[in-house]
Amino acid sequence: VILYMELADFMDAGIAPDHFFREKKKYAIKYKHKSEQLYSHIVKRFENGEKLASIFAGNRYSENRGNDKEIYYNLVPEIEVLLISAGEKDGNVSKALYRAKFLAESSVRLKKAFLKPLMYPLFLMVLIIGMLNFSHRYMFVEVKKIVPMDIFPTWAIVFSDIAAFFSNNIILVILFFILMIGSMIYSLPRLSGTFRNYLDRFLPPYSFYKPLQSAGFLVSFSSLFSSGLTPVDTINTLKIYSSHYMNGFFNKMLSVEKRTKKLDELLNVGLVLRVFFL
Image (cartoon, rainbow, N blue to C red):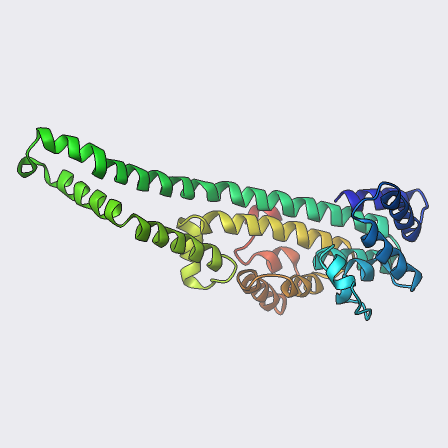
C-alpha cells in the first residue's frame, strides 16, 4: 500500500516509474536494506523494456524465468496487477495505483473483520471445555460429599455424566473441536448450494463470511469497473481469482446477463443486499 502511494505521488509529479525504483535502489544500497536485491531486479526488468504491471506480476506475465520468481512472485496480487495493467492501457497509471491501494487496504480490513468474529467461537469452546472439566474434577466431587447421588435431580445427573465424559476424554474432545472448526474454515470458500444457503443464514462463521465476501466483491467490482472493463468482463475477471463459493454467484450473474443488461438486475443474485442498488 505504501509502495502504491509513493509511486503514484512520484508519477503525479512527472517522475517515471523506472526512475522511482532507481531511487529506491540507491536508498536500499545506502542503508544496506534487505530490499536492495528486489529493487535491483525491478530496475533490471525496466531496462529490458518491461512495463510496470508485468514487473509487479513477476513470472506470471514475463518470459524471464530466472531467480525473479523467488524474489517477488507474490509482490502484488493478480487482481491488483489487472488494475495497473488497465491503467497502463488508458494512460493513467497513477489513478490505477490509487485504485489498487484502495483495494489492498480494503482486503486487509476485511481479513481483520473476519478474524475478529472467529475468535468468539474459539473462546466459547475453551470456556465450555474448561467449565465441564472443572465441574467434574472439583465441583461435583465436593457436592457428592454433601448430597447423596441418588437424590440428585435428573438434569444434575445428566450434566454430571456430560462433564465426566468431557473430562475423561479431554484430548479427543479438543481434537474433535479442532477438526470441526478446521472443516468449517476449509469449507467457507468451497461449499455452495442449497445447504450452504441455510448455513449462511443461521450458523457462524458462515453467517458473517457472506457479508464480508459481499463487501469484498463490491470493492473489487467497483475498482475493476472503474478501470474501463465492462460488467461482464469484470465478472469474468473476478471469476479467475475467486473461490468456488463466489464463482457460484458469478455464474448466476452471467446467466442473468443473457436476459438483461441492467446492472442492478445483474448483481441482484443474493450476494449483495438490494439496498445497494436503490
